[in-house]
Image (cartoon, rainbow, N blue to C red):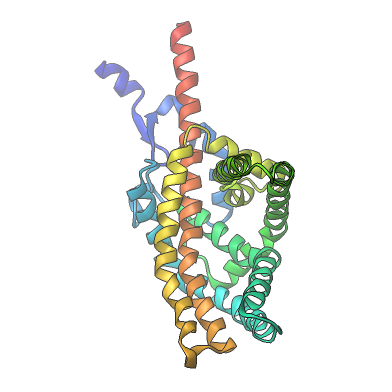
Length: 326
């Protein structure tokens, strides 16, 4: 046994930090890389190099534990908060000012104003906000894989590079939800006279949409991580969440619930009469949005954990098949 260990010693993957026998690794200079991470490793080299996992401020192990995911997300967010904040503010302050001005000047009751504001926010989030979201996701993925500090100009470059594929993914994601929703809406109105049936349809439709939201919810980081937007990104999200539905649903529900609680007071401040002005409302909305950027970082780190888990599972399955044949 000792002779076998000497002939085939364990080496640490420079990408994932996982230890494997040297015979099952690829060697790049003094570093070793697991075969399934070859493409990501080469891409990272082209983007500025790879750190040794032992030299990272936070060892990015792929444990799939919420504590590790949150810890790694916080390390990345703290390292890049200035770039994230500056880009977010530069884009969203003008957008929020325009949206709030339009909403505040809509004639009618408060609900009409709120409805207009929500629709504007949704449209801006898809068509313009994708630039910021893409930059944060790409930045997070690069840092998680061991890349160095991303400058402000580099953050903008990442956002522009991935804008098209992320926008396409969001549009297809929305269309998919609409197509799924249509049959439930039709059944709801057809059976409107039967209240028990309509309630049942509403509940089933809601649960089904929640299921799809979790399974497709990682399509944004998948689009950027794989450099393939649209349907391939949705399929990638579906694949990595297979067998992890409750884990992903629980993690995301917890993280975003906390972030919403932290950001909600800034929205509630606009209910104070002397703060009820479109400029103040826009600025408070931006502050809330900055807090929610941590959710984008955490979602990307969760995706990286799930991808690594899929690779490790595939490797173990191949090993078990080889062992059974032997």
